[in-house]
Image (cartoon, rainbow, N blue to C red):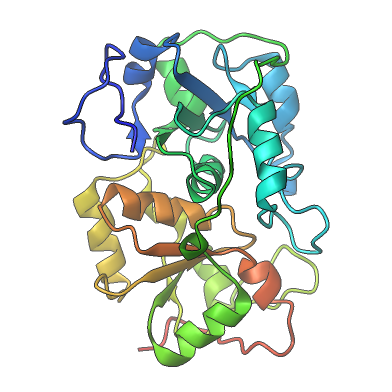
Amino acid sequence: MVEPMDKQGTLTADQPDDPMMTADWLLEIHGDAGLRIVDASWYLPAQNRDAMGEFATGHIPGAVFFDIDAHSDTASPLPHMLPDTTGFSHVARGLGLSNDNLIVVYDGMGLFSAARVWWMLKSFGATNVRVLDGGLPAWNAAGGALEPGTASPIRGSFKAALDAAAVCDIDDIQTLLRTGAATVADARAAGRFEGTEPEPRPGSRSGHMPGARNIPFTDLLDVDRLLGSPAAIMSRFADAGIDLDKPIVTSCGSGVTAAVLNLALARAGKHDVAVFDGSWAQWGTDPDMPVVTGEADD
């Protein structure tokens, strides 16, 4: 694994294995030759924000824009599904990325969609990916400059190889739930998980998978959308009744905020965690899949 850079941009062997990067740290290493910055902003339709338009108006200097919708499996009827390795290699190279770059991912919300792209990059073989803690708002608050326009990066050499352990499909989830070999942690809001609020996606039932536990991803963030400490993260998962000695599979509405849970657990040192890529967009719309309402069952 390529070692992370210290605050002066020098590679060190003793830097903690934390997937997060502070805005102050990024300011200090900005401009280093091996650094790549990725704007992974993505918004729900109800948020009425144009991620690509906002990037063109102003982004962290040197950043490229990763379009989560366009850079997924567009042939799938499900949203945001992982592309194949050939497709991801092509996208990553076009964005100027190579496997051994220090890649810092951020989004315009603070921490929302950046975790999904962090997870995608790691799952396809990037060796040193971090998420900007607090995202673009934290960069602005630290006095970071913005630049307008579009990016024209020099082509990278990224070679994608999917880590199969990083992702689960619906057959895997059914087996894990039946055997109890792993716990499903659902990152949706409590009302959607409990079935008291409707799902935003047409045709999707409200509720949760039998045996799943609810960890709304926002519970892991502070008021500035900074990710909690390792101790706070592990405490929140334990409070939700999740056995931290077992593997964990994360889920959400469409596989985006599920990755916030993966990111949080990585910060806490737990790495046997996968994403159910189809998430509730697949389970909740399949009439053959059982749906439970109410709080998580014991």
